[in-house]
Length: 128
Image 1 (tube, rainbow, N blue to C red):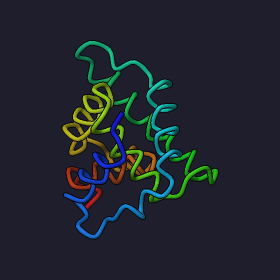
Image 2: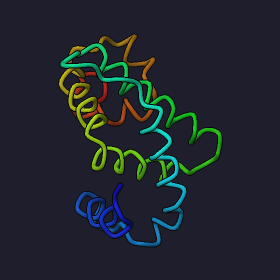
Image 3: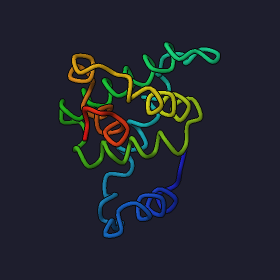
Image 4: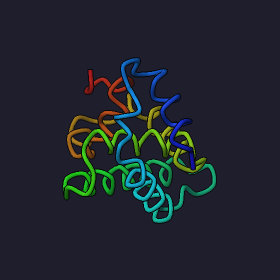
């Protein structure tokens, strides 16, 4: 798991005006990140289907946590970044998702969790 300063540095490269005050709920971010890592479905061995479903299910769980009010949307984005940078399985699943995003049909795209849509927006023909 990343430290507060490592996460701050990583996010600051993407969002220049991101400051330490944006990580006021760092303990909650770590707790939710660890929960998602612990409950993440298997990505299989070189399986596109397992990696896609694992990524989508993890995003669905993250969205449910945000919608329940356990963490804010901004903290949810920090959790997503924490997962991407600190968990190999999540990173592999996300890479598979971004590679497959251009092939996702409109109906499936609309059914994706918000965090998955945001992650694939750059790569999908529907997210632009």
